[in-house]
Image (cartoon, rainbow, N blue to C red; front, side, top):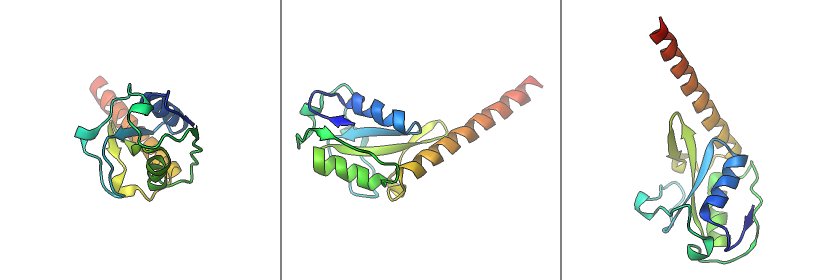
Length: 133
Protein backbone atom coordinates (compact mmCIF):
# COMPACT_ATOMS: atom_id res chain seq x y z
CA UNK A 1 0.00 0.00 0.00
CA UNK A 2 1.61 3.24 -1.13
CA UNK A 3 1.43 6.01 1.46
CA UNK A 4 1.84 9.53 0.11
CA UNK A 5 0.38 12.98 0.72
CA UNK A 6 -1.76 12.92 -2.43
CA UNK A 7 -3.96 10.02 -1.31
CA UNK A 8 -7.16 10.39 0.63
CA UNK A 9 -7.94 8.47 3.79
CA UNK A 10 -10.59 6.49 1.88
CA UNK A 11 -7.91 5.23 -0.54
CA UNK A 12 -6.06 3.55 2.34
CA UNK A 13 -9.33 2.26 3.76
CA UNK A 14 -10.36 0.64 0.46
CA UNK A 15 -6.96 -0.99 -0.10
CA UNK A 16 -6.95 -2.40 3.42
CA UNK A 17 -10.56 -3.63 3.16
CA UNK A 18 -9.78 -5.44 -0.11
CA UNK A 19 -7.10 -7.48 1.66
CA UNK A 20 -9.10 -7.95 4.88
CA UNK A 21 -12.82 -7.91 3.97
CA UNK A 22 -14.04 -8.33 7.55
CA UNK A 23 -11.84 -5.54 8.91
CA UNK A 24 -11.75 -1.81 8.33
CA UNK A 25 -9.37 1.02 9.10
CA UNK A 26 -10.49 4.30 10.61
CA UNK A 27 -8.33 7.31 11.32
CA UNK A 28 -8.49 9.81 14.17
CA UNK A 29 -7.00 13.18 15.03
CA UNK A 30 -5.90 11.96 18.46
CA UNK A 31 -3.80 9.00 19.54
CA UNK A 32 -4.92 6.06 21.64
CA UNK A 33 -2.96 3.61 23.78
CA UNK A 34 -2.82 -0.11 23.07
CA UNK A 35 -6.01 -1.66 24.44
CA UNK A 36 -7.91 1.65 24.34
CA UNK A 37 -10.56 2.86 21.91
CA UNK A 38 -10.49 6.09 19.93
CA UNK A 39 -13.17 8.67 20.75
CA UNK A 40 -15.75 9.15 18.00
CA UNK A 41 -15.41 12.94 18.19
CA UNK A 42 -11.82 12.68 16.86
CA UNK A 43 -12.82 10.56 13.81
CA UNK A 44 -11.43 11.83 10.48
CA UNK A 45 -13.53 11.92 7.32
CA UNK A 46 -12.43 9.60 4.52
CA UNK A 47 -12.33 12.40 1.96
CA UNK A 48 -9.44 14.19 3.69
CA UNK A 49 -6.04 14.19 2.01
CA UNK A 50 -3.27 12.52 3.98
CA UNK A 51 -1.10 15.63 3.71
CA UNK A 52 -3.66 17.48 5.83
CA UNK A 53 -3.95 14.95 8.65
CA UNK A 54 -0.57 13.34 9.20
CA UNK A 55 2.39 14.60 11.18
CA UNK A 56 5.12 12.52 9.49
CA UNK A 57 5.30 12.83 5.72
CA UNK A 58 7.25 9.69 4.86
CA UNK A 59 6.39 8.44 1.37
CA UNK A 60 6.80 4.73 0.69
CA UNK A 61 5.12 1.36 0.48
CA UNK A 62 3.57 -0.08 3.61
CA UNK A 63 3.62 -3.86 3.55
CA UNK A 64 0.81 -5.21 5.68
CA UNK A 65 1.32 -8.84 6.63
CA UNK A 66 -1.44 -11.12 7.88
CA UNK A 67 0.69 -12.20 10.83
CA UNK A 68 1.05 -8.61 12.08
CA UNK A 69 -0.86 -7.85 15.23
CA UNK A 70 -3.38 -5.04 15.23
CA UNK A 71 -1.24 -3.08 17.68
CA UNK A 72 1.83 -3.48 15.43
CA UNK A 73 -0.06 -2.09 12.45
CA UNK A 74 -1.51 0.81 14.41
CA UNK A 75 1.92 1.67 15.85
CA UNK A 76 3.47 1.49 12.39
CA UNK A 77 0.91 3.96 11.02
CA UNK A 78 1.61 6.30 13.93
CA UNK A 79 5.40 6.09 14.08
CA UNK A 80 6.23 5.92 10.37
CA UNK A 81 3.43 8.02 8.84
CA UNK A 82 2.03 10.16 11.66
CA UNK A 83 -1.44 8.64 11.25
CA UNK A 84 -3.63 7.62 14.16
CA UNK A 85 -5.24 4.40 12.92
CA UNK A 86 -7.75 2.09 14.57
CA UNK A 87 -8.70 -1.34 13.24
CA UNK A 88 -12.36 -2.41 13.42
CA UNK A 89 -13.70 -5.96 13.05
CA UNK A 90 -17.06 -7.05 11.71
CA UNK A 91 -19.28 -8.45 14.44
CA UNK A 92 -22.69 -9.44 13.10
CA UNK A 93 -24.08 -6.23 11.66
CA UNK A 94 -21.76 -3.98 13.70
CA UNK A 95 -18.17 -2.79 13.45
CA UNK A 96 -16.23 -3.09 16.72
CA UNK A 97 -12.95 -1.43 17.60
CA UNK A 98 -10.48 -4.23 18.23
CA UNK A 99 -9.07 -2.57 21.34
CA UNK A 100 -9.53 -5.62 23.60
CA UNK A 101 -7.89 -7.90 21.03
CA UNK A 102 -5.10 -5.64 19.71
CA UNK A 103 -2.66 -8.51 20.32
CA UNK A 104 -4.45 -10.72 17.74
CA UNK A 105 -3.03 -10.92 14.24
CA UNK A 106 -4.85 -9.33 11.33
CA UNK A 107 -5.53 -12.84 9.98
CA UNK A 108 -7.15 -13.88 13.28
CA UNK A 109 -9.25 -10.72 13.40
CA UNK A 110 -10.37 -11.20 9.80
CA UNK A 111 -11.32 -14.86 10.40
CA UNK A 112 -13.31 -13.92 13.50
CA UNK A 113 -15.13 -11.20 11.55
CA UNK A 114 -15.90 -13.62 8.71
CA UNK A 115 -17.24 -16.22 11.11
CA UNK A 116 -19.40 -13.61 12.81
CA UNK A 117 -20.91 -12.61 9.47
CA UNK A 118 -21.62 -16.28 8.62
CA UNK A 119 -23.45 -16.74 11.91
CA UNK A 120 -25.50 -13.59 11.30
CA UNK A 121 -26.48 -14.81 7.83
CA UNK A 122 -27.53 -18.19 9.30
CA UNK A 123 -29.71 -16.47 11.89
CA UNK A 124 -31.33 -14.29 9.23
CA UNK A 125 -32.07 -17.38 7.10
CA UNK A 126 -33.61 -19.15 10.11
CA UNK A 127 -35.84 -16.16 10.83
CA UNK A 128 -36.91 -15.92 7.17
CA UNK A 129 -37.66 -19.68 7.11
CA UNK A 130 -39.84 -19.35 10.21
CA UNK A 131 -41.70 -16.40 8.72
CA UNK A 132 -42.44 -18.35 5.52
CA UNK A 133 -44.08 -21.16 7.48
